[in-house]
Length: 344
Image (cartoon, rainbow, N blue to C red):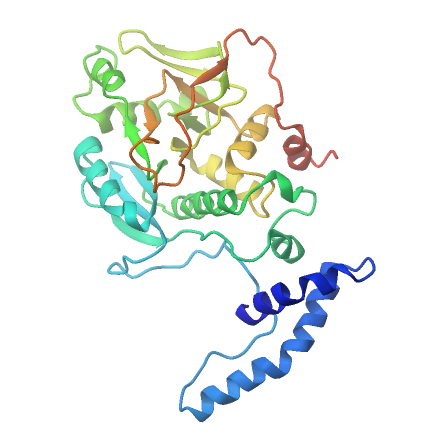
């Protein structure tokens, strides 16, 4: 792939001068041109007494493999970390330099205890996204100007975490966090002091919310929504706790959310191949009735976008609601809905 990327970069101007030609044809011609170079590298490795990997001119570029990781492996660019509370699994997606912050947050704010690194998340692709579209990793109908390499990596890191959860038979619900997570202490203080929650710590409050999935029928519950339309239809209200569970239309942001096993299966299905950013997919699936995705209001978790510029997100803090008088669900990214439903 390094040979291919170098050759592509050096010859991009030449390929643009060609008449209309498919990228797959360009890749095939490139592979033929590189064959002697790859074989020479292989032979040189053997002459030096090494045993290199078997050469492959067409190795599949994939972000979707679930790679089991030794417990002592701690130097990933992106790590998937897991803790457990009763029958609830807690997952974190963390950049390498954020792991210690995540461990401290899980221990001091959530009371989850020690986290295990169970796998590696997706890296930001170095090759053009067009390569991944040719390979079938990105949906053929997705306009490449509608997604960034960083969104690809974040979205698929979430998908990998969802897959770990789906295959974990010991738990019923999954709670997912990004590495720039912060807790709203005021919201939890009120909840813990309420007569309805009957909880004396953060995880007990969250566990109580997770148990509403069967009664309310949600498959995903956003605990930190942003850019949503408000007001929303209330499905359950904890009056003394000051928390409502609502059906929402544009519940963006994925720094803190619940998923059931069914919700995880749906999200995995619609993110392979990549159809849009993870936020866009969740909203589109909810709008089309394919995923029952609810939210809490007020939101219970925020993103630390002031002090943690090395996290998965670096822009300013986003508002919970932007449309406070919305009465009709407006599809903000109709092209995502079209890809999800197949109605182009």
